[in-house]
Amino acid sequence: MKNYIEFFFLYVFFIFSKIIGLKASSFCGGVLLSIYGIFSKKNIIGMRNLSIVFPGMSKKEKKIVLKKMWFHFGRVVGEYPHLNTININNKSILEIQNIENLLDPIKKGNCIFFSAHIGNWELSSHPLIQNNYKISFIYRPPNNKLVENLLQNIRRNYGVELIKKGPKGAKECIKVLKKKGNLGMLIDQKMNDGIAINFFKKNAMTATAIAKLALKFKCDLIPAYCIRKKGVSFKVKYLEPITYKKIKKLSSEKEILLFLNTYVESWIVNNPEQWIWIHNRWGS
Image (cartoon, helix red, strand yellow):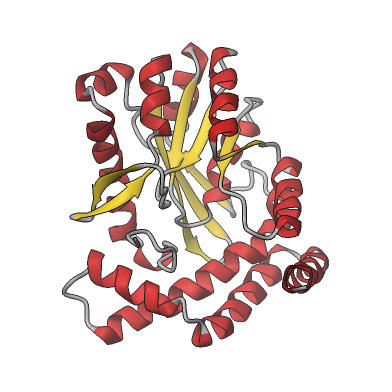
């Protein structure tokens, strides 16, 4: 019953959001999750995570970051119904930097681009899709199957193929890369069957798929992130590709993941209110 109720309210919000438009929907989502965030027990996780990353931050400062995070996270939720309408040529919404770092490696062969749950991460794949390249995105499904189906429809509507995390998903990733396809993944989530990797000076269980696949298929890795500038205005930036030569030099999966974590750490430090602190990243 809980799943049905959750889906009902989300679906009603989805329909309402389509009617009121992107800007109003984003703002309403921010307000709603800000109210929810006041009472959420997940703030305990958020405060603990902030203490790991910013040990010198005061309790008051951490509460301010979490407050801003809830509003930002709500905006992201409010923007989901409009993802298929956002065009990369609309400069008032998307500022795209260094797109050649994305497109040039893909023209030479398949690649994997990675990001994190920061800004509106969904928009980091738009420039690839709207330049007529296919992308298969690895995702972790929500526990609510009805909500998962809704999110799948939203993502497929704006052009991404989806691969569910897990053993079956790993086989699908291999098929995609064998056919010279491209993969996208978010690498900042806890993965219980991963390996312990230092993340902000504390071990966190980390998925090894990106390292395994890059070594096996000799792929370049492309760091990408999307940061909210203001309202529904974003900056998508593609950093210099991490070449297979560099990956091979790092040699082990652990060293590769440590290196990739340095990118995510910098994004979080520079934009703390836009990372999802309520995920139990360092939990047991």
